[in-house]
Length: 356
Image (cartoon, rainbow, N blue to C red; front, side):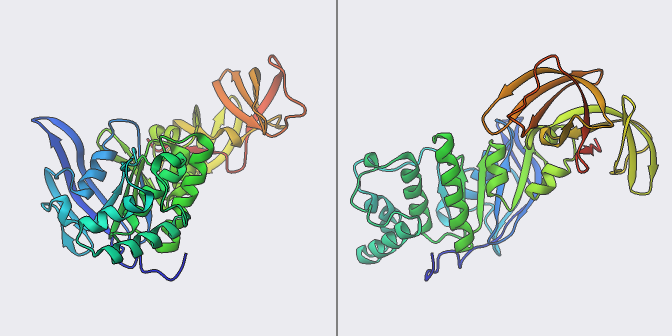
C-alpha cells in the first residue's frame, strides 16, 4: 500500500464545548470537549443512546451543533453543511448501489464531485487496490461477501481523499470471524495511509483492537478517554471498568496508605495498589477475570459455583463471602469441578482501585 497520496490531507478534529439538543429538552450531546489528532484512529464507544453516533454525525455535518465550536483542521465547520466539509462516511449498511458494478460504486462519489470519467476510473481502481479488491471491479455487490462489500464502501470513501474518514458501526452486519478480519483491514489501511479516522462502535473488543484512543461516552457526556491500555488498566469509575472489557467489582477496605500506594484488604487478604487519590476506608476495586489467580497460597476462600469449557480456556464462577466473581484459567486439562473449594488471589498487576 504505497505510492499514493491518500491520507496526505489528514486533519485534526476539535470539539469545544459542543452540545446537541433535540426539541426543547432532549440532550443528545452535553458540552463535550474532544481533540482527534491528525492521522490517528479514535473510537467513540458506549451503549445505545450515549451520544456517540450524534457526535459522529456532527463531524459529518449531518447534524448541526446546538452550541459550541467544531474545527476540522484550521477551518471552523460548525455551521457548514455536509457538502462543504471534507469528510467521508462509511455507513453500517454499506449503502452500495445493487445495480452498479463494484467499480461504478467506487466511482460514484468522484463523478458526482465533478471528476472526469477517466480520472474517476483511475482513482477508483487505485482505491480498490488499496483495500485488496484488485480485479473485482466488474462484479456486482450481490456477488461479494459481506466483508468484501464493506471494503468496497471503504474504497468509495477513500478515493475522495477526505481530511477525516468516519465509520458508523461498520462491522455490525458481519459474523464474528469476519468482523475480526475486516477490523484488521481497516486498521491496516488507516495506519498505512495516515488517515484521520473517527470510528463509532458499541463493541468493546473492537474498540480495543483498532484504536489509538478510545472515548467512552455515557449519558451524552464523555466518561473517560485514553489509550486502550489506559482505559483497560486504569478505569476512572465503575461504568468504565465494566464497559471496557469484563471486570469484577469488589468491595474492599483501604487499611493504610503510603505516598502513592494503598494497602487494601478483603476477607483478610491484603495487597498493595496504586492509591489513585483515595484515603483509608471503604473502597471498590476492579479485577479483570484473567487477573484472578486461582489456587494462590495466600488468598481468599472461594467455591467453584460453575465451570464452563470454551476450548482455549476454562471459565469459572466463584462465590464466597465477597460475593461472586467471574474468572478464566488456561488449564483446560485439569478443570475444577463445581463445589471445589479453592483460594483466590490477584495477579501482581491485578486489581485497580476505582477513584469514584
